[in-house]
Image (cartoon, rainbow over all chains, first blue to last red; front, side, top):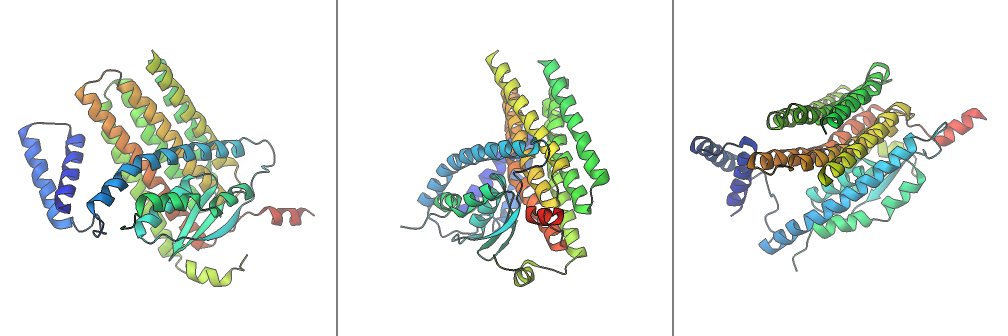
Length: 164
Length: 101
Length: 112
């Protein structure tokens, strides 16, 4: 089941990247994708206990999450632009280190959370140790945003759906 | 429209110059690596703009993709190298030394 | 005509954010704050410029153009997921090397 999904993903990527739709190239791609699926299909989708319904809801929720993330990225850039163009002494700068605990369980969820924290205004994840994140924040104002844990709820809402 | 693409390309190129200053002056080695990484991202965009100018986007998009991949692998390799050069401290030992807030 | 306007608008926004990143990289006082400018400024402006360019390419909807736009969007997604990763890797390397953080309180005490 999972092998078929991986194979069709790889084959789609092949067709988009080669851009040539004739028999020779399609056969070449077919053989290559089959080979890759056979040797390395264990690497993708490591958590296979999830049901099909959960996967589908996860896939359906990803675009909404991406749009929200895009909006946050634009906000963070406006923040950086404001800081960078402040004349004279930059008053907004007040860097500090924070530690935050997460309740996310899977590695993939933590990875997504760390990346999202890096892309949102004023914070960068330095390191993950177990369930603790070490975060560098650029000013007091942005420090409050991380501790409210809105983002963590969003991530667990999208990527860690419990079986119910 | 072509004039606008020329303008965009020149502007991206001009924005690389201040970052080259950071490469030359940068106090630590990692500052320089970060600057090179930033220039790499700009180059990815610049390649596609050049492709639009010559009306051969199909070809230049492949270059841009390769450049983005190489940029990512390069910065990861540099970071890994610095971890190996200086393995003295790790996160768990730092935690004991730092005063808790 | 409308498509041209939207394209020009998106690319100009991207260029402005590029300016923010470049000025930040020069002006910010220490390594960590520079990482903020480098890691974020690039991602957003890259996404904006690539979206504008792919809208302009879709001006003439042919199969080859759709493939090119697919590749461009793949580049955008790829950079969007890898740029934070390389930022973590580099800032972690710097953190473990023990680069000192610039702090506002320290500076005030030094001046007085």
